[in-house]
Length: 478
Ligand code: NAD
Image (spheres, rainbow, N blue to C red):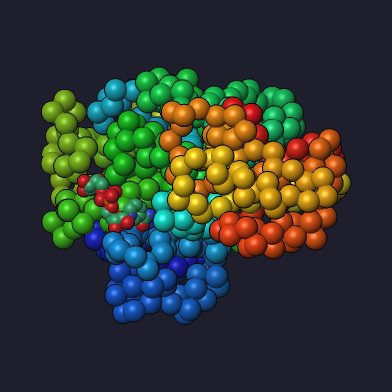
């Protein structure tokens, strides 16, 4: 008997969780449940994290969580609990299988069968944001080598395990050369360990367009967090409905299974919610727990119900639906079909399913790191860059020079265009000639000189070379 944690969530959460648990019980799943409260009621009790310490303890003890969607109250002060849980529990990989069930579920893409593997812990979801000047806010995009290695290796291992032929990488490294560039570089390194699996790469914008237009050319697609968040919803929707796709958030210790959709407050309490996404997540969970026969029994009964045309309103269509079913009627139909298999759709077969085990990535030797400059960011309400350049040049000493000023990344000094719109946020780059190193003390003196010149420095970034290779971007136009 496996003990799991169950969170019924908010909105349609309790309706689809009850439906899912009814099917699990009827199929003979060997499970015991610990129920925890998450989300709305916890937020509204004054706990801005949406989760109590006791709930954390239960999740960490049982290690497997089946979670219905939760509502994040609008307004400041409430952190998204989903993001907190994924990051706090080290759930580095989010897997969503988006497969068409044509002709039974309407889709423009009858042949699609795409798995989106989304990095789950890094990128812009680090949640490190600051307002730096009255006009400018910033969100830090963090991409780490160990993070890339874990998710990309997971994608290839997934492809190997499930007999998938190709892994594709989506990034925007023509623009973000260091962050997305690292993701792409690690992809190119890891793919050499899997010569039997085809691999390719798209810039994310054209990749997203191709997924929306011809998803059947993709197989497994791996990408950083934000792109994965957006593209996995698109991929799920075009396969039939967001109400159908389950997901797993994989960690080294804990694993969380959840529907990809939200709490759907617009239909909550109406008895019409489609429980398929949560049920499919539960099927993934049974496979994770090694209860493959029960997982198969449920998946096949669900596929048969799709073929029978017993459909909730979100997937009801004139061609193949035979009954517009309530959540309860739909669930009853699945239970009645337990033990049966679909006649046209491919039968579920999980007999070869094994948990994906990643070997511990080796930490690369640390490169030689040399401080070769500093970017000081200043809040200045002026409009003529030459004026602030004058003050900044007065800060220079001992061969350190003001090399350039950019505004929102575009060079405005020593060269620039009158047409460039400038905000109150100026990046001022100081370096010695010939890339001679700086000391930390040089940086401190620059800060002190900025105070003397009444330059309002609001943050700084050290410029390092790593083994002689610049670890910073140039200004646009430089
Ligand atoms: P949503 O996914 O809840 O709803 C979008 C649309 O899809 C709605 O029209 C809804 O009725 C429909 N829909 C979603 N699931 C359905 C289902 N199972 N059956 C039938 N129709 C379904 O997205 P939203 O409206 O943007 O978000 C509502 C709330 O959910 C917000 O508070 C948001 O923060 C939260 N949310 C939670 C999660 C999660 O817990 N993992 C994910 C996304 C959004």
